[in-house]
Length: 239
Image (cartoon, rainbow, N blue to C red; front, side):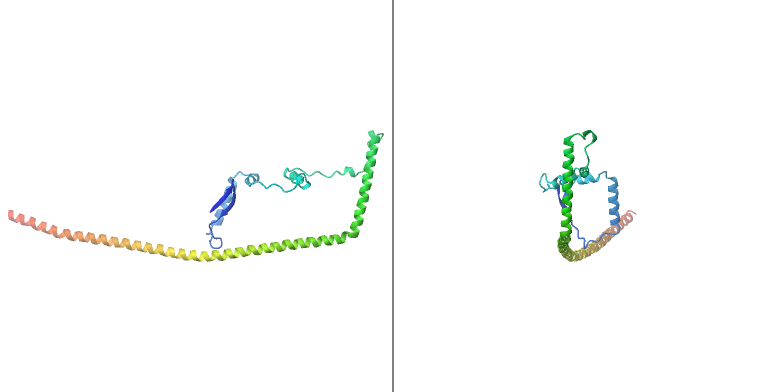
């Protein structure tokens, strides 16, 4: 198994196994799960620690200063969204301490005019909605349906490609697996044959050793008898 790394993050791995052919021995899955659980209990790393191992995100493609860029920065900074200020929609008089302030009354009048214009604009929008809203909504739904269908077709196409790749991979692995099994059976046969040959060689070596021992015994026997006869003759001569 080989892999290329960027820092501590694995970019690519090449696994040297055949998932459609290799059989998982009984009990291995349970053992692997136990090892993972033990490693998780021993580890002091948090989710943030794992995220720090990831390579940095690519720079955002949104224009700097745009609303969506500012919103992305707010979310990244974990800042709460500013609530809508509803006080500006209320028609309030100036406070008691500013009832004689002309500027305060002008500000209140301007706010009232803005609220009146806002309500008039809302009425216009409601009239447009009543007149064109139904058809506009139908067109919007048609666009959504077309988008959904396009996504579903793309998903089906990807799924078909995935199944095709997996089928091709399975066929290749099964074919290779058959060859591997044949080679393994041949290897086991050769190993068994070598063991039998080794045992036969050991038996032959034992027989050879026994033959050598018997030949040595046979050659030593007559010489001992001759020496015994010579000793007897010498004793008789002395007598």
